[in-house]
Image (tube, rainbow, N blue to C red):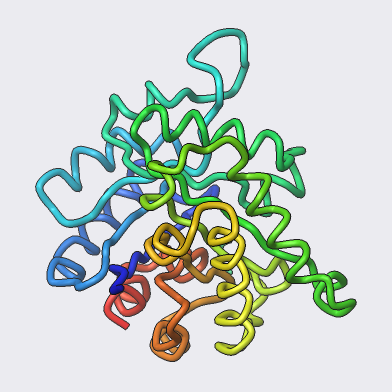
Length: 249
Ligand code: PGA
């Protein structure tokens, strides 16, 4: 079954609204004929500006996180309803930087995933191992457990539309990319986990991205691998030219 590739830019804490305007305006013509789904995930503050700019284009908007509650006393958090209203259709959930610096756990990842689905926002669920975990042969156990916990209680009819991002922590922002074989093999293992939980058809429909120092130079060879359905791009998503080259690998 053919899965449509999906390339998403994770801007992290970069770009003011003015800077974002420049980047998005430059990006629109460069990716208008892309074969892949194109998503940009700017900081929350930039989302309304970005939404105006991408209206009528093939660029979809994603948030970098999402809270699980509908509303209430959660200082500093943003709800699914707020995101939906400004035109967000994807949300990155459980990025390793959230897990590492902001106390995100498998349990909160699961809660955020459910909130996104309930609001009609497609989650991009991030999983990935540390260098130590890879070197001690724990990669498959770690990513399978993370995927399984993220998906706990998710209804079978919601699984097909999900996006998962395999992001080895040691490859993020380091310039050190997983080899195409490593990425393909680990993604296959994540797909196997989905299969175990939801069956073959659902597992084959879920799109699983690779993330971690993916750039214009290595995108083509990674994307040529049968299990890799896209990329979650950090550094290389901050320049229109670079991101468009990844999008059109
Ligand atoms: P990177 O980041 O492309 O800068 O390595 C990827 C990510 O963290 O999503």
